Length: 54
Image (cartoon, rainbow, N blue to C red; front, side):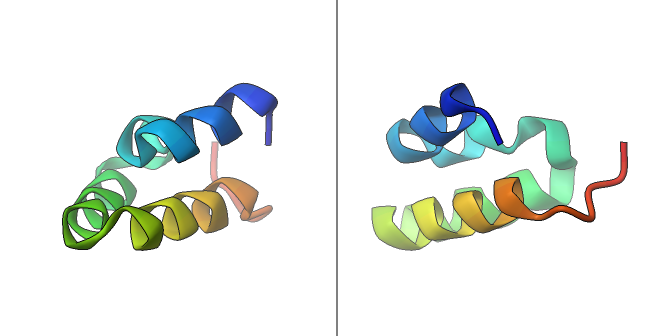
């Protein structure tokens, strides 16, 4: 988790999770539409996940 990703997840969460797949982007985008805070929380959880497949 880099500082750039954290800042992006606070400013616009879907952009921060682009490298984690289309499903993650869609989930975070929908949660951001429902409210900014759920989108930020979801983005931070996805970014902080250590089981990322590269």
